[in-house]
Image 1 (cartoon, chains in turn orange, cyan, brown, green):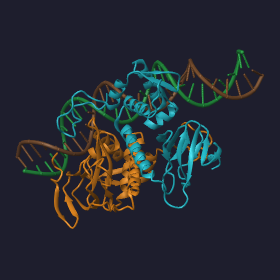
Image 2 (cartoon, chains in turn yellow, red, cyan, green):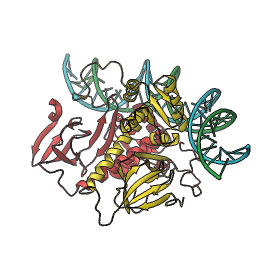
Image 3 (tube, rainbow over the protein chains, first blue to last red):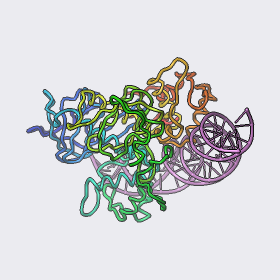
Image 4 (cartoon, each protein chain N blue to C red):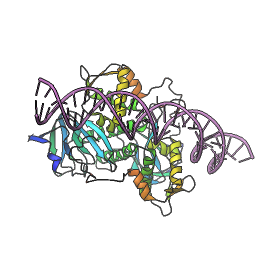
Length: 218
Length: 218
DNA sequence: CGATTCGTTGACGAAGTTCAAGCTGCGTGG
DNA sequence: CCACGCAGCTTGAACTTCGTCAACGAATCG
């Protein structure tokens, strides 16, 4: 540790540059700033007593993070070299008219995370994750995978082995093509969606959303 | 649709009575009310395209729910017969100074959920869940288990078989005693805490990340 | 160019799901 | 009051998945 500010480069006009891997703030720190991503990618993660690391979110250009109230409840780290706009929290001109917007956003992000973790199999989680990534960073010729396998694993609650294997399987099945380690091309987005949503073949009657009758249990 | 209000009984002075199993509002509905539990227990759950059900929270007397902004993003259902105080959401975003407290609570609950789903064995999840329950509803002679095994399973990301088995194991190990299906007595809260926190014996050196040595699972 | 970190891959075992059967408690109706 | 049926729960056995262990290959950095 001790690397808190180690990665910070030139700061000018409220911008700060962080080197890949450096920590932007620690879980537990007093929230002196909030941040907006100008370029690069940031991850937030929580460390648990047992050493388990849970990545809760990735932030891309335009995203805002570090809005916690009394103390940061997750750490933030630069996944790639990143340029951030840094806003001091004096007096509390947070971007929202109150904390509740920030809270709502955090809640939405937490729910997305729950959704990923709730998907049961490794294939489902990874497919869903890749789709979310595509959704977010559409590019002509493929998708960047800026984060390490370990990051993906810690985000999805898997091991890097399973991530690697599953990616390999997808590759063999022709769903994706790996182009180097940090980039991939989606070949069959339909199939991926099918895996992510785990659609079964026979949706018999009307129930996309209408368990009204009695199905309290599953 | 139709059954939405089916379980609603007498409504007077902003109170509404819901019968066990009835739906209070559906995921996707416009948020016309927010609620406070007067008595009984409520669960919120999200249904996914694949039929997978994720229970995100249980609410007990005094708890507040239904604060979503543009539409309810989870359904709410009565686990037991429940009496709720119902507040209309006329006009403005959300009233009440208690809102941000409730949001914070929701966020904390979501994080707890993430923690549970993230990387824990069935025993760890169930021990943690029971401790949370005890924390919340301490009673002289035991703990109510007002929700079904299926509810617990869908909350913890397990099957009802595993829930049942694990409960049985705890019983055999003398950690708890089941008294009928819906009530249990905690016999060894120490041991349960140890399981829930997955404490290992040797606190690591200085690294914030030392999962290398210890088994996360147990 | 060697060293270190990161990623891939195979073998194996434990944990949990699935399948299948049977049990319990409760409500309904005879 | 008891028989019956149903829904929720428990339990056993087979099977699948994924984490662990281990070894190796590939990129990156000095």
